[in-house]
Length: 400
Image 1: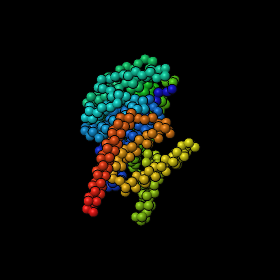
Image 2: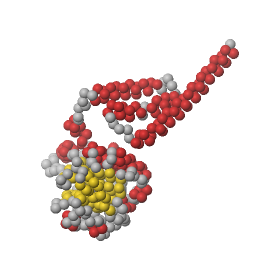
Image 3: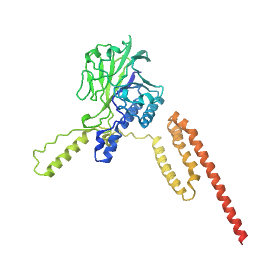
Image 4: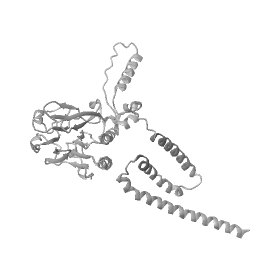
């Protein structure tokens, strides 16, 4: 079996976006949440492709962030990979070095964050060794090349280096850990997983050197579709790269020829036509919704009737639960709402052989305790109501 991993960088999770100034509230909401959704798309891709690892080459965060909402969200996504047996290898870039979350967040043991001193981790994969090298930014500034600080490649192993670098420099990017591409090719590493420059590039040479770009653009200066790299190292140690789309929303600049327009409506019509053509050709994840008919897989003869039955039972249960509030107090119905959480989990286990996650097993005692407390409270209220009715009946007889 080959060794496969996803290589990404520069997610800038929960980055404050200039595009939030857009007047369209729906579009502003979409863009504001796009970095999170892009990370979810990356995790989904890891699970779908059943990769061995996720490599994040720096700038997972976006500077001096202190929001624990970001921390909790990230921990949840990393836990998904941990439960699937997928390792995460991450270095800190210049933005991560500023983030307080980096020091405070507790992540699953399957997440390896390389420190400010170079490390090399050795893995054994189907008969050959893999060495993963990493080095994080200790400070936001790194004016000198980091390459001399990396440990030498391990003999007879496939060596993967993770580095956050501006290479020889790029427009719009400050020089961080500058490095010559030729030096990377001659370093003896088989694959260089780079980060920092937001535009994807693959640097040809005797080795594989990839700058994946960012998985989600944040403004018009980061236009175009955004992707990650799916890397496969074959049993013969050959390396193949697939580019996979992750951008939820896509920024584009359009040039529209209005030289032949006679009236204002001609200009408006030209703009509308250009926008429709561009949206049609866009491969963003939003555009992927329109491709559902082409990616739909028809359920088999076993799953199809189960899905129909689930829909019918779910609809009936919703109607029954709604009607029940006409005949009983909410406190009496609470146990049923708590227990309703269990039925979908049991259905997944019994009908579709889906394993129960450790997170659910952790929450199960709380669910059962909540149901028990609600049942006890409901029983107490029934006693009070019964006693009140008996008292009213007795009082009525006395008065007679």
